[in-house]
Image (cartoon, rainbow, N blue to C red; front, side):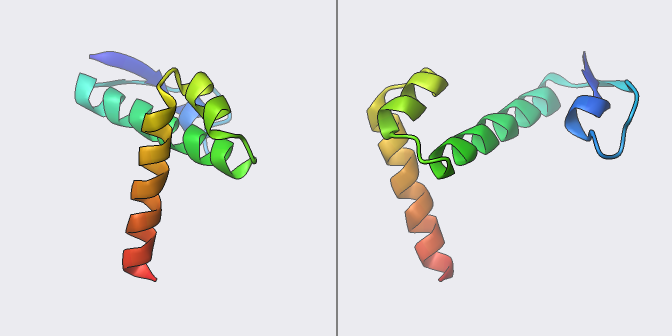
Length: 78
């Protein structure tokens, strides 16, 4: 079990530190969501694929593939 600070996750709700223990699976889900949100923010901040790849520590082809998959998913809904 790992401890997470809910104030870090929900700063609008928790004004003070509030630690809870979570399983490794939950922690990985939180981290994956944080990475996805950061990637989304970078893309919409006008960053180039190379800049996103450097910030994420991955190859540019992974960034391009991720963008393509996201656009393909959006096309299903619109």
